[in-house]
Length: 457
Image (cartoon, rainbow, N blue to C red; front, side):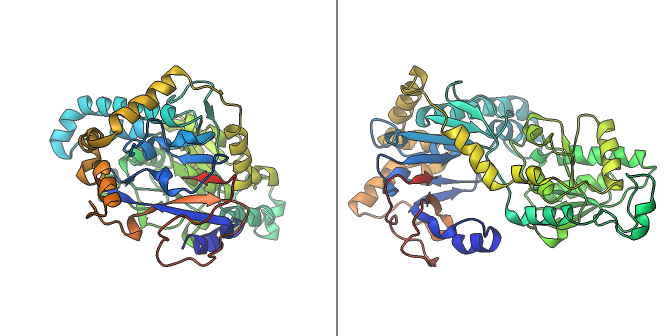
C-alpha cells in the first residue's frame, strides 16, 4: 500500500528501495496516539554501522518498554531525533474534561499538564538521542546547545510544485487587452484564481476562533460584504467551529476532508492560517508551492516562509485586513525556480543532512546519562508496568513487561494487534527489497538488510 501510494502521489521517490519492519502497537483513543507494546529495536535487524532517525523521539519513548541497563537506541553510533509537534502547547490548551468543570479546573490543570509535557520531552530526547533537530524556534528547548539544532527538514510533494510551475510559465495577462492597463497591480479581466480558504484539522488549537474574529473585522473594512470563506478539513471540533462561525456571521463553506492537492483547492487564491500552535505548517509550504498567497500569523513557526514574495504575515487585526484585502484583489506573482526548489523534498533532505550530521559531542553529558538511567530504572519489570499504566498508557499499553513475558513464554497475549493498528519502521537503502509487491498483510519479521542502512522510525 505504501509503495503504491508513493508511486501515485510522489513518483520522484524511490519506493522500491523502502524496507519495512513491523512492531506491535496499540491505538490509545484517549491520547489520540499509536503506542508501542515492546522494544522497537528488537524488530530491526541492523548492525553497529546504522544511523537511526527517530520521528518524534519523545512520542516513541515516553511509554516505551525497557529491558536492558541502557537505552536500546544508544547501541547505534548516531541517533537523530526530529521534533515536530508542540506537545507542550497542546497540553496547555486542551481541557481535561468537557463542560463547565473543564473550564473551571483548566487554569490549574492546563499549566500542570504543559509542565509535565515539557519535562517528558526533555527527558526522552536527552535520554535517547545524540542529535535533536527542531523544525522551528517555536518549540521549547529540549536538549543542550551542542545537541540541539533548528532546521526546516520538511518538503512538499511534486504534485504541488507542478501546479506552481505551470502558473509560473503562463502569461499573467488573461486577455490581450490587459497588456494596455497602466496599473501593473490591476486585477486581470479573467482571473486564474479566486477566493480564500483554510485547510487542516478542525481543532480549536488551530486558532479557528481567532480566524472568525479576523474575518469579521475584515468584513467591516470591505464595507459589510465579503466573499464566502472556504474551510477544508475535518476534526472533532468541526460542529462547534461551524456554530462559532455562524454566530460570528461569517459566510463560510465547510467542504469536509480533502487532500490539499485535490482539484477543489488548486484554484483558490489565498490560504489563511492564523495558528500559533504549529511547529511548521506544511499546508503553508504546499500553498506557496502551488503559487498562492499565504496570509499567516507573524510567529516563530512561520519564519521560514517570510522570504517568499507571496507570503503576507500579520500581527494585528488591521494588518490582517490589509493583507487579506490585497491578496483577494491581486493575482500572486510566480515563484522563481530557486524559490520553488527551497520547498522541495530534495532541498529538505540537504538541510536535514547538514543538521543531522553536524558534529555531536563524543561523550554524553551528565544530564543525558541521568535521563537515560532514570528512564531505564523506572521502566523495567512490573514497576514499569505500574508507572506506565498510571501515567496514562492504560492497562493494555502499560503492561508491556507482562506482554513481552507472555509472548516469550507462549502464553496468551495481552492484546491482539491487527494490521490497521500496526505502525511501521521504514528502512531506506540503495538496494530494492526482494519482495517488490505490497502484500495484503505485514510480514512477521524484518526484511533482510544491508550494513550501513539508515533506519527511520
